[in-house]
Amino acid sequence: MALTDSLSNVHPTLKDSLSNVNTVKNKLPFEKEEFIGLINNTLSEWGLQGDALIYVRTGILLLGVVLISFILWWASRKILIQIIYVFAARSKTKWDDYLVENRFFAALAHLVPLIYMDNFVRMVFYSFPGLAEFFQKVVVLAIIYVVMLVVIRFFNTARDVLREKPDLKDKPIESYFQLGKIVVVGVLVVVMISVAVGVDVSDVFISLGAGTAVLLLVFRDTILGFVGSIQLAANDMIRIGDWVTMEKYGADGDVLEINLTTVKVQNFDKTITTIPTYSFISDSFKNWRGMAESDGRRLVRAINIKIESIKYCTPEMLNKFGEIELIREYVESKESEIEEYNKGKDINKDVLLNGRNQTNVGIFRHYVTQVLKNNTEINDEMTLMVRQLAPTETGVPIQVYTFTKTHDWPKYEAITADLFDHLLAAVPYFELEVFEAPAGSDMRALGSSK
Image (cartoon, rainbow, N blue to C red; front, side, top):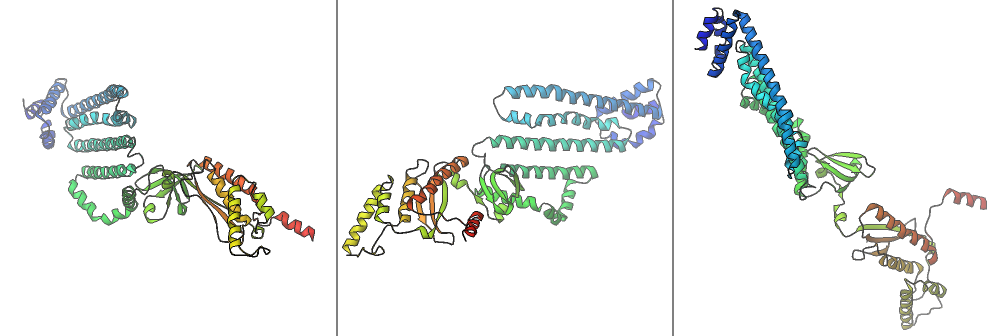
């Protein structure tokens, strides 16, 4: 029996309501029309007629669709998802574990009842085309939103899986996934707007095209961050785990995360500094990766020698220095070389200033060199030298320039401290003095002596 005939036989007043919903009826499949006709016949047999029949039928259908949708949702969440979780726990692949961890299947389960509701919402509100149109839009918008969640959680899963790859562990892959999320969300938001206002998607994109300048202004940081992250990755300028120093932002520590718009640096005091990604392109920074990948960590430190303590070595001083194991051979061979030179030039050595002579600071420099070469923590295959810098108002700097074998910060500091503990204690033995600015006690002692 055709639906028109069945409704007309039920009650004459239904002809008017039928004429109001012809457009909706024509969009329903034939079996759904038959189902509505069957309900109408049943309700008419119960004594319902006119508007009462329409309202009761709508209420019954609405209750049925909501109830079935809830059952589908419960079955998807409590049964199917639990089965998937069991299989994921037993499998050896990482993908399913991360899909579960990021609640991908939980989001996917919402699509089952929503798709069911989308198929039956027009049938429920068959006699109310305005409500049918409204609720179908709401359901479609909900479906699009859930699809957005599903895609975002899939991106999160792909990001987590790729982070496990050794070759990609230190790469800024977070930036690319963030860009992908922005593109997907942007497109789906446009589709949602199109559905909500009933306008074609292409028309919405055309309207947005007119506001490109505004969009560029709004997403300026995002665009710059994306460009910056590409350049950082392409030129291998920074990786996750690198130690970087950027004085402009007060950053000095390890890179924790490289996002589309920001780079997070954990400073050595455990504070977090957030720096715009593009700043690593536009501003200068120091990356200590080269040091970390080398065979040692540079050690540069100087001892300032008081200028008036520097002098030529007397025979007594040479005898004293010759007793030091590390430089005995040097002192003797150097003194023989100097004596030979002076004799060959027939130099009058009654005056100490004539000819060549050893100085206490020169012997001290050689002593420091030997200490470094005999230190098992110093990498003697890299640059190793003890040099004298230009004199300043704080004395003559004797600088150690070398590399330790370790990169570990606490161990490096311990090696440096042990080395200079020894050198500072050795300075007086060479009849040298370390320069110190006058302290308050010195000034008080000077005043009391006067």
